[in-house]
Length: 566
Image 1: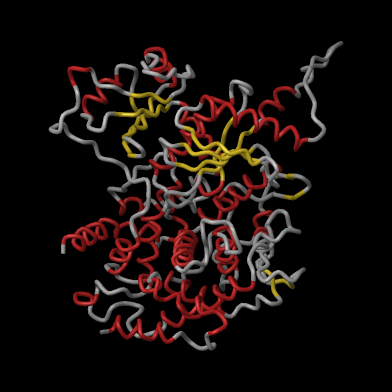
Image 2: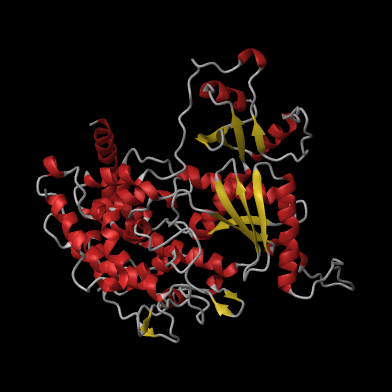
């Protein structure tokens, strides 16, 4: 069938990349680069360069700065639904050299165009005109978001070519399972899932562009400020479609204002004051949120959540298709993003296992996009990191070990919390562990299916179990705010569902034919391995909760396995 044939071709196009991933920490996943193309046309060369690339890996800050600089040279353009790409590029080239561009769809067709020089974007702003409106008046805020209109005598016709649109969301679960079934082994299945779910280079560029556009709004009040993405958008574990968390960084404002001159006088700004730093944060976010809502093109649904533990404003950037959270007082989250970036960059098995466990948990309702008593993606990621720290030999170091490798430039104290760890990846010794992902997946499920949650906590700073300091069902110590439990929201019912599902899934992987179909030419279209774990039917054991007798698996899972072998 045609869809299976397409999956087969897509899979064979991906297989050479596995040599890079299997090279351990020497291979660098696509989303970590700052200007890598979406597809590697010479993966064998990349594999051959493995040892060299391991010594040139960029730090988190270097990647951030490079992408933020790219974003300043970039424009977002709303295009006609059918547009000639060649004529489009010829028209824009008159403003300057174009480094890269791509098209995508979200409430219309859009192009992201990066110029070589920032002056090219400024020239676009000079040449663009105020739109004509009938019955409404335009708000005259001139951003780097433009609309390209065809001349009246060149209206789009059905015969005009359409441009290739870059995917901004994940494929359906059915298509994913079809692709997984065509893999050669379980390890390859995990890498395929990661390849399908991870943020593309184009999606990352769009995220940094939205941050840059929001910064343009904030610059009216704070010209030296920077808006940086954090969380899933930059920590290497982001999934296509995830929210965009943004941090309004006012550090540059404070640093430039703190310079002292050794002279008769010193000059300082005369400023308003507020009772507390939190009150200042709330005022800033309230005003910036109002400006984004009133003047930011494409920004809709503004919510001010100023009384939260970390005040923020939430809105949708409709043209980009992102749900956005903007804060200005969450520096520990920035350090957490960098820490996860370090772990995700050390060994490709880390990211592959995290993506697969998150997908497995989401399919079976262990996690949810709705706030509640569910286990969060962050908690799952901490659980995977902890598990990998406990391998023999460990696959990744503990946070304390990363702290011991840090130098003076890496020192970070945030609100009295020591958030210090090494930022230079080349200082971290690579693991000698060579375990394959099929082994790690099975052992992860077995490990947490029998973990003593009733008495032990999870601590990635030490890399070992510790006695729980309170009676929370699941206790995962915050790596930086060490008195906090990042999984405090989880109740007994949801933890029990996770444990039961882990046991059932572990049992399924041990059954005959689950590691690889016995006859690939006949059985490749039947779910096996990771694909079988992603079938919703497998969640019955977890859904039955305490009504189900403890055993290797539920009766329905036995029936499912029987049907798979038929």
